[in-house]
Length: 314
Length: 208
Image (cartoon, rainbow over all chains, first blue to last red):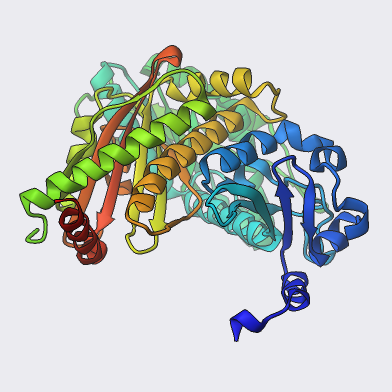
């Protein structure tokens, strides 16, 4: 049956392909140009047959097209142009206008040797696949994965590090500082009388207050310090390469900014303060995360017990 | 690997040596200068040995560009071409100077493109000549390139062979004028070895 197919049948088969197919001879002249190529290039068969592909598409030289096609003629291998490296070999418009973030079609291209009876490569067949959809899906998957990773590290309300991420980072920093013989400081902050904010102004106000509180604290830190939400109205601060004396300067600045700030929600204005407990590895070397947290927590307790709105050392 | 008798192993080595020698001649046309391939070695390996052989064979221990390309046909498997250190950059200059064009690509992408294409043609030339000697035709999947430190866990995770055993063909190549050295590994799946040994036996019968 296969031997009985006439050339017009082969032409119909080639024109029915949902990918670009064209053939070049050794002089880079077009000898075959399928319907897909006509539709996407805007060039008919009559306009391209017998013409130099480099004259029709001058940009191909800069995309290493002729270098690779010549290798196919010389060596008889297949050549590949991946979308990851080239995006598009031919600047055809993307076909989908709903659900598409690319104006230019993303393409994967294969160049195959076509041999004569004697085995010599006389022509090459170039196949262009539209992979725009696959690329869009791949980009969406990457973005989703990135967002998922962020979500797993960030507190959704205040957008600072969540507890898990903060504690993991603290563990890593403790180990690093111990290896390098450096000191870090750890502080726990607790908003004073936060329950009153919720009771008097509602939970929506309370949520906004937490967001603004986190922003204000973040703005008062140095760029390599880290803030995390431990839970409720409690936050932790990691101050790398910082001894107790320096930590007290940073925390006093944070405390003062908070005390002087006016928080706003709709027509309501109010003030908030925070109590803080701080511990330094300089004074308590070789302690693990849990023990340090407990010491900072005890110092926080003393700050609360002695009037609030203050910083206490462990 | 019961099928790989010593006489078969030597025959495959000889066939590969002839094939690769022919490949070098045609590669010289494309890459210019003088490309040299060491005499290839053939051995049976288990999947666990694959990574150790790769690590031990590659003398440089810094970052390595790894190109993987699957091939299929009557015999099938995967080729791995390892290009250590600055080989990628040196190849890039080779292509730009001999190719006589200024590519319209970011430099990092151009380096990857050159590594991929040179690997594609070296792998294609070597396997192409070997398959021609065996009167068969094989086809290739698009190559993929990765960059790893050879001692890293990711390198070990990446090269994880399947199946109980494989036939390994290994050689080292060098392009002296451009200071490019690379390592070429071909892994033939145990599932195609019956066919391969039968062809090798025919070749031996015909030539003895």
